[in-house]
Amino acid sequence: MAAAPTDERPIDRDVLDRLMARERARYVADHPRSRDLAGPASAALLAGVPMSFMGMLPGPFPLCFDTARGNRITDVDGVTYIDFCLGDTGAMAGHSPAPVVAAVRDRLEVRGGITTMLPTADAAWVGSELQRRFGLPYWQFALTATDANRWILRMCRMAQRRPLVLVFSECYHGSVDETIIVVGPDGRPMAKPGNVGPQVDPVQTTRVVEFNDVDALAAALRPRDVACVLMEPWMTNIGIVPPRPGFLEAVRELCDETGTLLVNDETHTLSAGPGGCTQAFGLRPDAVTVGKAIAGGIPIGAYGVSEELAARILGDPDADLVDQGGIGGTLAGNALASAAARATLGEVLTDDAFAPMTELATRYTEGVQGVLDEFGVPWVIVQLGARAEYRFTPVVPRSGGESRAAQDADLDAFLHLYTLNRGIFMTPFHNMALMCPATSAGDVDRHTEVFRAAVEELFG
Ligand SMILES: Cc1ncc(COP(=O)(O)O)c(C=O)c1O
Image 1 (cartoon, rainbow, N blue to C red):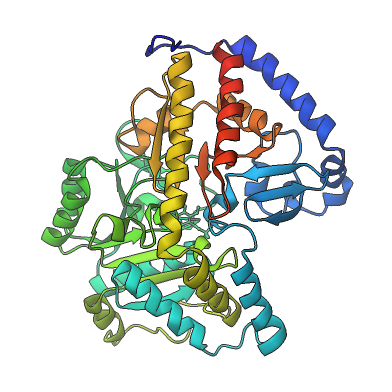
Image 2: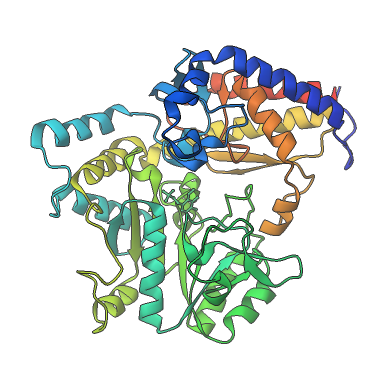
């Protein structure tokens, strides 16, 4: 029988500590080889990991993986996981999908030439496909979504002859200097706590307001010194924060009124469908950035611009776009990434691939909701197409600030470790689950079962 829903269902912190100690011990016992690799074998790695994010799993040492296929990862101790993290979207196509492997192998072994500083036919095909999906006519490539965002911000400032950009508080657009900013406790902008060595205080480069706050956005754009708004149409990096009805329309209108460009960062929101939120909700941005998922895991980023913006950028006599003007990289647009992107978009993350992925995310959402209802737990789960995420608050957050306030690091760590110890790999820094073409209903139901067991231990 379902427990009565209640706004207050406090966690017994002693119980949580005890459960966490048990889970940590289980993790240690199950992963002797990962522990060995995390010791002296990784002494040459700063913080013991090849990239800082990889130290984020809540176990006492990082998990080292050995093989991955589809939505399964097997670690060096031979433990296999159902992967709902999928490289935090980079593996939305599944791990090593066959068409991408074939295309990469063809480029590497048959044709040769990973990086040549010359275009390939694949790049042109991918540009056309992105044009079809996002409705923007001109595209170029980067190596990461971070770089795509960096470059589009430069282009917007140049085209507009305006110094500032605007982002929403608690956004994440990669390690882009201008975006590491939040609305502080006193309502004023401040660098995000922990911001590592910014060149300048981002308060000098950026306006920041809370998502869904139309009045604050209007006030911030009114001086007409903001070149562009860079936004995820649904925030995805502080839980999922959906736009309230009319918000995205209001953003577009305010941009039009103040001559501000609008950039949709669809790196994560591609989960909404083949053309991200832009296509799914009929949005009209001046530019779009994407990355990660579109090349099946091979590093890539891309940005697309409108006809008008392209004309302004290309016609700007002061813009050095072909040499050292601040846009570009030797490896960007390389032949390997282009081949991988063509295979991913053409054969894996096709238009038809998204409906079943979304159905599975709905099944996942309903499974989690059923458990929350059964135990009367006041948490909320939000779905955006193929991804879903629960949050420790009874109502859907309306802003990054509200969602940040719902964070509970200990609870979060427990749920990640509990599920990991039972063969489910969740995204380390979210309670996010993403479906790929290889995910099955059985995988989703296994998560529901494990999640139920965790909730029962906490609240039962
Ligand atoms: C919305 C968004 N934009 C950009 C990025 C940066 O992507 P990358 O790590 O490929 O640079 C991320 C990464 O999570 C992201 O979530």
